[in-house]
Length: 481
Image 1 (cartoon, rainbow, N blue to C red):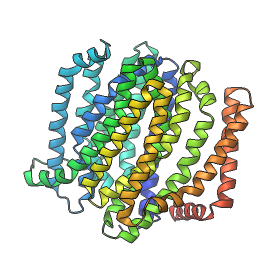
Image 2 (image 1 turned 90 degrees about the vertical axis):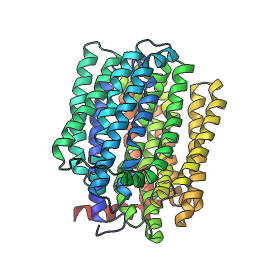
Image 3 (image 1 turned 120 degrees about the vertical axis):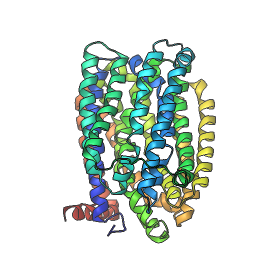
Image 4 (image 1 turned 120 degrees about the horizontal axis):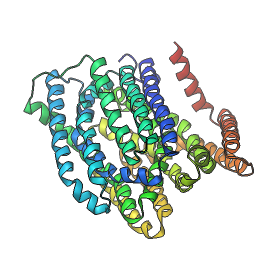
């Protein structure tokens, strides 16, 4: 790459296409979700969410951490890519067969007989996704998000139509399964058509050992993180009800649209660039600091604003039978706020090749999360969500202290970089909540709340965050060049 900073035109183009892909797809999926949620019941979403624990873990294991290993390896060969491809496929098939056999036992665990057939069909997504891991890794290493956008956009459109058709025709939970499987199939078919890479009949044990040596540590970390997140889903489905799990799952979905997606957009584009100067601590530190400022500048107001209008927004979009979702969403927004801060610190360890440290941090954070889940569970689902926020905050402190030390950007410096944004976003959130609470009508409350939020946050930022505003303006100018 010609530019080695977060302001470089290549990175900006990468972020732009990554953002277009992510948010155009999320926009379509959000519209589909709203329309389907008006037809389906929380229990339908709860049934499918009960299977998320097994599907997510299986998909991560099938990937084997090889995607990040391929991106990070600057001297990767055709042998590396083909070896990773066939390993992913083989593991994906094996995991599908295991889940197929375990489906009746999982149904027994939840006392939901319908889960057997649902899981056996939904688990096909594991095999389909395993065929795309290497393609996406190669395209990401090239910062070619335009090609990826084509496939994911087609997948979102085709699956959205399929899911809506099934929901309107009374298929219930099967509508959600059909949507997810169709999404994977349409995305896979399009990606194979629009990309030029094809696997060759090559397999090297030395290439596998090299990739898996790094990828295995990331795999263990990713599995631990997903186990922790999915453990909440599994526990809520078992201890509470399918209704409660459906509300919790959709609250997470509504919150993650802005936080996790925006964070992944930027990280996905910056990761290959940061890998290029993994041995240049000064540049890496400056890039990470700018990343923290930019990510928080956009995500913090979204989270505080969403928390402020959670109730009228939920009522306006998906109806009163989802009101419990709004209460959970308001709490979860504060946990989502910390997602980009934790993810960038994990990324530092990936870039620096400290896989063992990454794994130890994940073990610590998961241990704290499980302890908090155990303590909060008797007090209800809202308390469980509060525990998630506490765990996210503790994770940030520990992660920033350990990972930040690798690039001379510890927890104090990271917190100072984002503090002005957090103060402005907090003030904005309080103002929005106060204004919308005295109004009548869901759409009026949402509309006025958004307008007041935008005006107040922009005003506060211009007055008190001139440096970050200049950073945003400079990036926009370079995008136009």
